[in-house]
Image 1: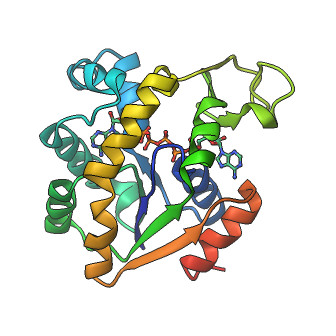
Image 2 (image 1 turned 120 degrees about the vertical axis):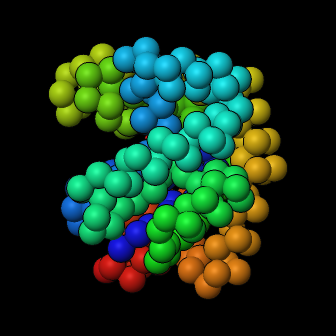
Length: 207
Ligand code: AP5
């Protein structure tokens, strides 16, 4: 099954995609994670992406599309995948349609005030990449591996504001794009992580 996860920054796409991957064995392809890895490894793609990400802007379509095409050609994607953070523009969706058939696009629906609180409290493990909210943590150590937790640069308030504006302008139109293709489903994800996962499975008809 080829699944696209749609949703504003901080809606919980990554949290739910990781859960679905661990539960159902479908690989999660997160373009944000791929860029952050490329930045850490100082690859040419990473260097190009960094300036856009630091501002909360989208990385140019041609850079993202080339990276995703390469990733989807790998062996683990041949029986399906969860695209988390891609496509993000209509151009990206059109390019994706040329190489893949999307079975379902899941819109993770969360009001803006919840999103701002989730992003302000997000902490990421430097060692294993696990993502948490400060409300779930006892201290600054990763509950899974003990690694040190940090705040993402683009979770600073001024960058979050720009990311939400960019989402409204460039990415929200994809909701209509996939509705028009008859593959859009929606999960209300305002609850706890467990409650939201149930809503995700129900929307995907995987429960
Ligand atoms: P990316 O990493 O994709 O960021 P994003 O879409 O802004 O999404 P986030 O990772 O911020 O949020 P999420 O929805 O995954 O939420 P999460 O599960 O972490 O992209 C970063 C940048 O890369 C972009 O700005 C852009 O520059 C570039 N980029 C990436 N893809 C691109 C593309 N296709 N085209 C162009 N540029 C691209 O949850 C958020 C927080 O909430 C966490 O702390 C989590 O623990 C917490 N949380 C989740 N669920 C709950 C809950 N139910 N209750 C309480 N807390 C919760």
